[in-house]
Length: 633
Ligand code: ADP
Ligand code: MG
Figure 1: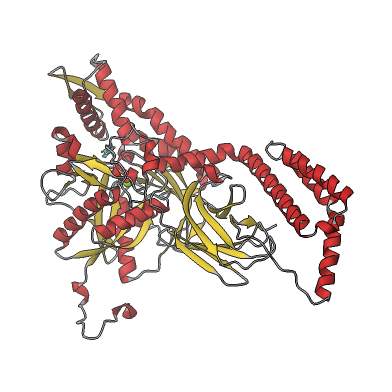
Figure 2 (figure 1 turned 60 degrees about the vertical axis):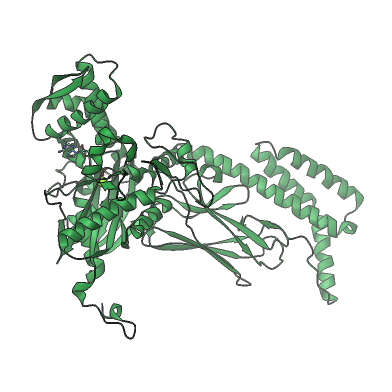
């Protein structure tokens, strides 16, 4: 602490109380919450009416200042074109990501403009806004609420993100906070924050699961706690499964019960709002009756708990399937889990609680309000980071990070689920003689080939000295910091030529794309491996052909005509096999070619030794080839 209190000469040091407060923020898809901790006791900051949740909804009307929260939600009925909700789904996503989803999203997308780097923009209420700006407006409202409630400035925050948020989405979140005038002390994974709120850092050891069912998303994370260290072992979920789906099922039930097979848009919207109300009421009541507007009249429909349970059971069961998958992937049996933390408003639903209890064989931890628990944990972490604490947070990388190598194959440098912060290096080498530059392509994903993974960044290392193929040693280092953000550097070991890039993609993976990629990687594992081996065989074949051609160009005199003819024949055979997919045939032809050129190689070697003994050196000549890195043989 003392070290932090150094001031520039002439500057009057601020007394401790005058520094801005540090808060914890859960920036949710449906609702956001801000909390503060004092002496280890966290509390949610509420509006004068006592409400802690701020709907993550923003309305851009005629006023200069946008409306955020309940007030914005009210605008949905009369001016829906001015209102944005669920903006979290677009964090870190590019226009390209959304093309695929066109028509399924309730947003109006703006045309891209030069210099925007691919970040998606929306048209709302006559303005053109990025998800970062819209999230910043939500964060500004949370900051204002905290300042009003604490009576002092708030300028720092711990902000939570889903455990599987990729680099782009984390960067976008941090940028949004910065735009809102908040310094981000740390981005913390939501499940980790929830565990902190339960005080699991104090002496709890073992495996814990965090089951988070919100408005539109479901996540399950498995944490390992050991001596105050939190490690997210595995995470999985469905980015399109949550309480909103319960609402849809109930609304359909209402409309069907009233025989309305073609409701108008506004009737459907009102039915949905009523369905949500009914669902939330049935959390504490056994049954009730609700008014549904239809054909200008209000009609009453009953709904009881057993009917609600029947309507939502398929969705609740789906969360259980995901739980089983995540546990299986982490090789953990449900009884090994020592506690299950419930997060998200939808875990209030009695059927959800009962199903979770049955699956894990123990009552879940649910004493803390499930939609406030993440913000409370974030507040504790904010206090720990400003006042000091021993708790060390360890999170994991959600997807593997790697480098493209020759042939479009991905060499994974940091596998998925590696605890962060982490730094890993891997050596690569050149593919061609005299290659003096290397193009690096950083990708994220689980598949074996580049076109199936997500491109994060490209950069180039120049100034590699001319050497024979495979002689250069280029060390590529991936460093992921505590916020989950990646920096990549490359260094040629003999010359020290260095290049570094902070990987700051202008777009990133969407949650559902991330989930899809994880699922795909499991399903396609075997086929991918086949493809990878085939590509590797082709790359090796091309390398051998290239090396042979270069040798023949410099030492044609050392190759007798009959041997040359034999080699030509073998080269033609190999070239004809290359476009095909018979890996064994390619490998066989390469071996043959190498065997048949052995005598020639031997003569070249003898000549080189001769020249060296005569005090002459072999000059490397050649163009200026630049290529992707090759794997070390
Ligand atoms: P997110 O994490 O997506 O921001 P929340 O954790 O705030 O979302 O959860 C919002 C969801 O919780 C909504 O679908 C809402 O209907 C549901 N919810 C809130 N309170 C209750 C309740 N008492 N009973 C059932 N569902 C509830
Ligand atoms: Mg949430």
